[in-house]
Amino acid sequence: MNKILWAVLIGMGLLAPFVVYPVFMMKLLCFGLFAAAFNLLLGYTGLLSFGHAAFFGGASYVTGYLVKSVGLTPELGVLGGTLSAALLGYAVGSLAIRRQGIYFAMVTLALAQIVYFVALKAPFTGGEDGLQGIPRGDLFGLIDLGRVYTVGGSPLGLNLYYFIFFMFCLGFWIIYRTIHSPFGHVLKAIRENETRAVSLGYQVERFKLMAFVISATLAGMAGAMKSLVFQLASLTDVSWHASGEVVLMTLLGGVGTVLGPLVGAFTVVTLQSELSSVGSWITVIIGAIFVVCVLLFRRGVVGELSRLLKRPL
Amino acid sequence: MADYILETRKLSKEFKGFAAVSDVNLQVERGHIHALIGPNGAGKTTVFNLLTKFLTPTAGTILFNGKDITGEKPAQIALKGVIRSFQISAVFPNLTPLENVRLALQRSTGNSHQFWKSDRCLQKLEGRALELLDQVGLSGLAGEVTGELAYGRKRALEIATTLALEPELILLDEPTQGMGAEDVDRITSLVKRVSANRTILMVEHNLKVVSTLADRITVLQRGSILAEGPYAEVSRNPQVLEAYMGSEHV
Ligand SMILES: Nc1ncnc2c1ncn2[C@@H]1O[C@H](COP(=O)(O)OP(=O)(O)O)[C@@H](O)[C@H]1O
Ligand SMILES: [Mg+2]
Image 1 (cartoon, protein in one colour):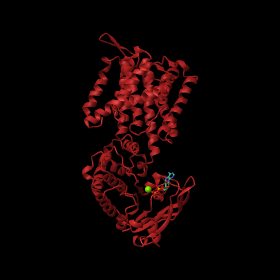
Image 2 (cartoon, protein in one colour):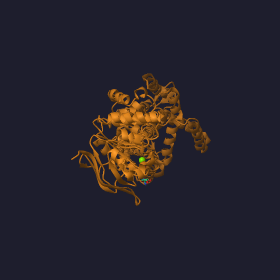
Image 3 (tube, chains in turn brown, orange):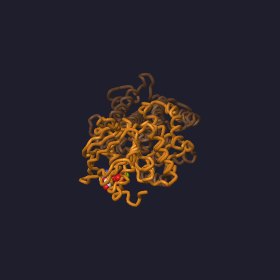
Image 4 (cartoon, chains in turn green, red):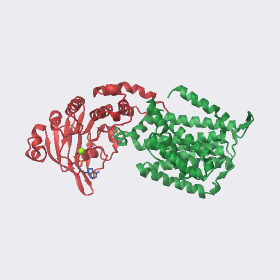
């Protein structure tokens, strides 16, 4: 993809808080990263995980706990949450990759439900209420992430925004790099024809496990970021709904495309906030939009665009 | 004594009591093109799956270069230099032919686990990949979508991908199956060309191809070896004529 496109996207990201409500923008970034991490597995390795909320939500609890109860600085909190997702990803991945197709999805779902149960019952997770009032703290003990600047009469939490934007760029860059690495090419081969990859001498279990851990780690990073943005770690983010939502975002935007998951996540999150007034009908409406999109654009929005332009996006 | 690159001893495979392969003692001489023939369902593909460990034998041993490889995993067998093709063409359909071959070349670079490195380091493999594609007559199609190629071309690509790994022993499962006469000729001469300095074990139905290529033939019937020897000898064996060749014999 060309440099101009990237420059434009980064420029938009830098200017966004002056145009869009920053908290909303940060929510987009968190879910965008979550979906991009998920897509590394579904789109580039051909593995459908139905338990990615365990990493996203799990990490948000760990970060929340580290920052609120242990008193770590936010960057260490995010680091801790991310690492916990990596470990959990290693454990879940090791068990799940022994199975194929739908059984793989079922193992991930079952293990994610255990994480949900822990989040509900453990003494340090706040049960039904979750962890509330997580402080944003001072970055490196120096920069107050809670600080609000008044720009043109409106209060903007720019410190937090740029921290989150930086983390997003870092995570997204790691995913982009992975996709376009020698390793990423082997992942695509496994997605395309696993037995052939084996017969060429690739030990596919190792590749799948590595992909799973990378994906879980970055999904965790997204969750860790989210807990700072909303100052909350809640059951919603570890529930199977969240696991399903990320599948939906990815399919909607375009599975196996670099930008698709971002487009999908932005679309779903925007719809959810625009339509929040209609109450519980929202699920039905988003479901209907999803069905229409899948029927019209089988490869997702970006997938179809990429086919029209005859270039990978 | 002849130099055998591959030997099996009493190799057997049962599927729920059904003996698909029983007591097969196969000996493949280094440098030969060895054909494995037999009627449909004789167990030829199963033998290939056992040799490459895609299936685990019920009994018996497999020796490669004199070493017991019966306990190895499929990827390890490949790393030792035994590369197979599949009866149904095995390519990476959404990648280009160039990428297909490059994936095979990439394996020996040892950078396949490096997810932090740019794939620009793979560019240096492209020259060799194009050479290999050229060898099988596909250099003009290097950038196409593999899935959209004609069947015969996919099989040719499969051979190019296999060659990229510099295998000592190539197993080809019906490389000319479902092809028109022209493609059959092309694949035949291709196999002949690539057999220099290599050993090839191939399953083949087309007896013309077998008679042109094979140094030695093993006939399999209902999981057991019925006859073995040079084409001229085997094709005169009355049991073989009755069981398999029949009127097809030319
Ligand atoms: N995975 C399997 N499970 C059960 N039976 C099998 C399996 N694979 C092959 N068979 C049986 O073993 C026999 C030999 O099959 P195969 O090796 O494919 O024959 P060939 O390649 O010689 O045509 C057939 O009867 C087939 O139905
Ligand atoms: Mg067969």
